[in-house]
Image (cartoon, rainbow, N blue to C red; front, side):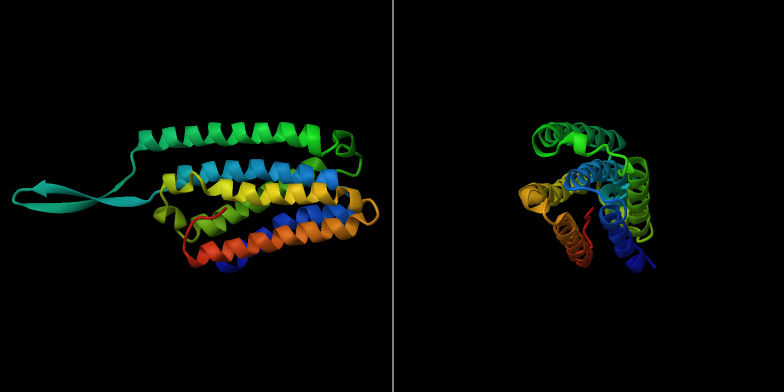
Length: 210
């Protein structure tokens, strides 16, 4: 079931801005703003996955005249410190990038318009990421094979994808005035394609990817 549900959740997340464009008439600034919200979601769920990570390691100890191996989890204190450090580092990066995006790339007066159903879009995106988390990470038992340290750099790969999409959207901003729906559709479809390709690539390696 997870092999079907996980790709569907990825498609659902990417359909949100597409529905916004076709149904509610979102502009480029609003789509970029939602991608900024997605960056926050990526960090939140990565921290959640670090909390749930339960990978065990073999540890040898001497019993009498022979040694035995036990399966032990990583230290609770070190895991907690790693998660705290990740949250601080990631969201400091998000805050820094947001200042650039909100002051240099998008025009906030074009974001908060009556056609921008922000709360509904964020809730829908959260539900999509929650479904992805459960189907890919919990149902498959991936959390039992994952160390919190393995997840530390994982969302930064996703940030590169989102950053590339945002920059591309900005480059298309001038052209999009003539035909915004076409260019926004191309941009969103490109991101969906990258998300699906990276999902199956890391799934084939049984490696974490957000």
